[in-house]
Each structure stands twice: as C-alpha cells, then as structure tokens.
Length: 112
Image (cartoon, rainbow, N blue to C red; front, side, top):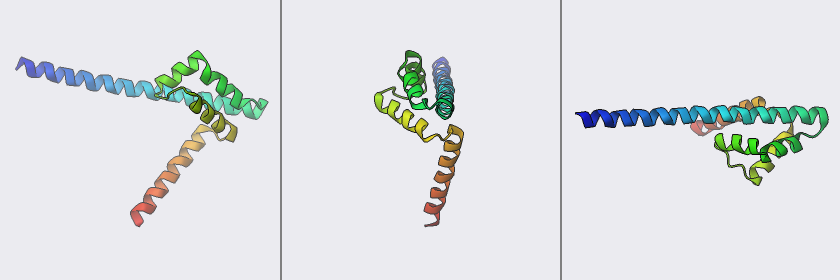
C-alpha cells in the first residue's frame, strides 16, 4: 500500500511541476508579446521598431526570456520578430485575427 501512495505522490508532483512549467512559459510568452508591442510603438513613433526588437532578442535578457517562453532564440526567430514588428499590427489584433481565421477554416472544413 505504501508503494501505491508514493507512486501517486510522484504522479501528482510530476503533474504539478508540468502545470507550473506551462504557467511559467505563458508568463514569459506574455513578456515576448509586450516586447513586440513596445517595438511596434517605437516603430510608429521613431521608425526603429524592427531594430529595437532585434537588439532585445539578441540581448542576454531577450534570449533568456525567449528560451523561457519555449522559443529558440536563433537568427530565424529574430528575423521573424523583425518582420512582425515591421507589419505594425499589434499582437492582440494579430492574435484575434489569427484565431478568427482558424475558426472560419475549421467551420468550412466541417461543412465540407
């Protein structure tokens, strides 16, 4: 009986740690989204948004935040962040548009 309890305890601890990790990644992802929005605001005001996000993403802090968000901080990612900022669409708008397009595509697939 003791073995069962300790196995259940280990499973509970593993599930708890996984959930904590997921929450942590979401928190760091929110920081990435905020950095993107800040860079978009800089781009509209000063015209240097893509350079700002690239500088941040290449910095030690930026690389650490990206890694903690589950994003590999490589040059391809930096280029993608720069392109996103260059488009000038705030993250909340882009995410809501992406979600609505995904739902529309799903509805079309279900109707077919």
